[in-house]
Length: 431
Image (cartoon, rainbow, N blue to C red; front, side):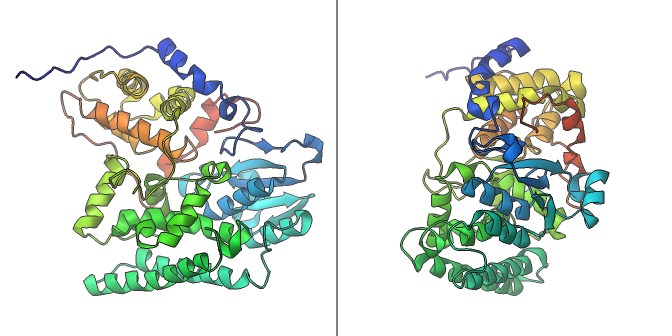
């Protein structure tokens, strides 16, 4: 029986792609980031209060990579404290703004202004916010919370020891994992001590203290160690699952690929175990298929079902920055235009469009630099990466060509300044 041939199509043009993106652009996330669900683009979140009554300004990084910024950001969203955001460049991906280094000695992030008073260091910031607006659940210095904060630091140190210190053999790798597992089990026990999935019975500051680094541990240990945190510790998986039912968390949540590649310059290096399981999982995180573990329901990255608008959101976000993306790609504006339209046509319609010869390198360069949540949510990023990779594989000249390697000493390939210069955000929004 003869096999059916794949039908090839011409890519949509710019006007046609814009029409396909229109439904996503009409949603509150795009039209009103200040009042819609939690999102990285909003520069003001008034929560129904007049702008003149906003007492808080949060200084955080452009890319939403900073874990300590995420902790404060999520607290403000959960507690619904009105705030403004000013975004700052982290040292690892560009030059920090002079106005910020004049304001904050050393340029550390996050910082927060409360009633005109500048506060740095995330724990001090949360203590000041609790004093001004009341705690979220039990406060930072409550008797029940203090040992949990200590446990979070112990888990952090065990993670760093395993991830960031090179092992001299299988025995040292095993000791690193055992040290981490010991404290992860203590976290799991703390989560199981009260009814419900959260610490101390309900979502509170104690949980938010754990969010940034447990999220990064989940990603980095999968990529560099082949270790699936949520699979090994069901109580931690239930905790993540409960967080992923909250729009506040989904608006700040990153993904495995982003964390695996933003962490090395921040941590001073991340060291892979080199096992077959680790190499396979890292390959899947970089190239797909996604989710990286089958069957459905066992996704180690998220419990959230893909939203119906994931492809539309991805398309809308790309089109907003299309000119800058074209200009910064190794293929250049003219070289990437048609290949990108081929990938976006596949993304939004499912139609296969063959790209010109020599396209794979530029498509994969873009695939590797999609940042979650800065650019788009997790499922939208998966959709876009899949479309870019599938289209790259159709390159008639060199379907295996790769883009420039992702740096590990810095991430200046992610310098936000060209995008800031080229963006035309709606009122109240930024990158």
